[in-house]
Length: 336
Ligand SMILES: NC(=O)c1ccc[n+]([C@@H]2O[C@H](COP(=O)([O-])OP(=O)(O)OC[C@H]3O[C@@H](n4cnc5c(N)ncnc54)[C@H](O)[C@@H]3O)[C@@H](O)[C@H]2O)c1
Image (cartoon, rainbow, N blue to C red; front, top):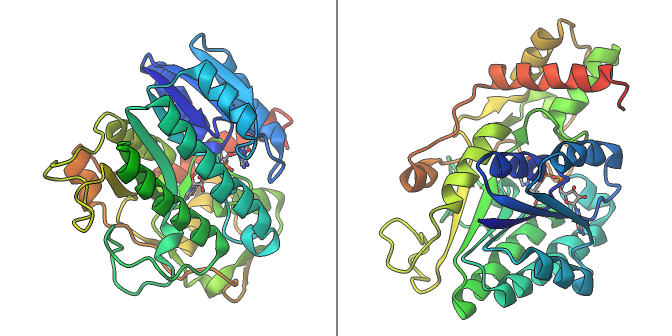
């Protein structure tokens, strides 16, 4: 299969592209190489992919429709996995326009291109953040998600909705995934595992937001990729007894699926695991909750399991060990 992965130089896009290449697919990657975090990390990920013969890459911004049109023409994809986005909850308070550009205009462009390319399946990334401060637990796909707490969450909800309309109008089989706090080797410097590991390794104190009373449903990146690959090969179809899940919209070959373990873990347990993996003790500063943060994320993994026979399984301890081993080797090579 020919698969176009947007955001291929990003954390998840890199892991997915690597897995798809190992499975024998042809992968075309596209990424704007934005400076939200150190592009050297993105280049290092790309260097790994570039060594593979079935990989091609274009640098382009999602908002640049002529450039993206050329990318899609060259790639002629059977499937598009749309992962490029302005990510990050907190940054959306500082730089909201970046979210409008990448996640609204950019997502719209990808939908138009998926339509013109006539792909057999479009998959796109949404987020657990769209459940906001929901009190019902675990979070299920059909729960209301109409009260986002950040523009990041609102922009991802908009992406889900726009993709639903395109799926319905143009009969594009579409899967929107809601990812739950993904972590692992080659991870993001703006996320808690990296921030904690970096400070602990350097002997700097860490801020523990929400006085430690924050729970996250951490998902190890290899598990996430396994779930994506399984969902990819099972596009939603009208009349499917399991999907689409939205009974109010039986005609659209569209579905939304949580990808998480269904086992929220307290932030302090992550810190304990990183301490063990690095063999150093953290100096912990207890601080209040940050604006836009939610106290808990908790995936229902029932639908994922019904669709794929799989649910993420890597324990946080195992995952934190793998992340820290990579983190040490990446820095030992002189990287930032
Ligand atoms: N990592 C997580 O825990 C998590 C959780 C929920 C949802 N997500 C979603 O998963 C997807 C992948 O996230 P990630 O963790 O790999 O993030 P990432 O920031 O590492 O990857 C995103 C990539 O998109 C590229 N990009 C950003 N804006 C762009 C634009 N306008 N045009 C072209 N390229 C652009 C960036 O250069 C980056 O390489 C995103 O859609 C994100 O919102 C991630």
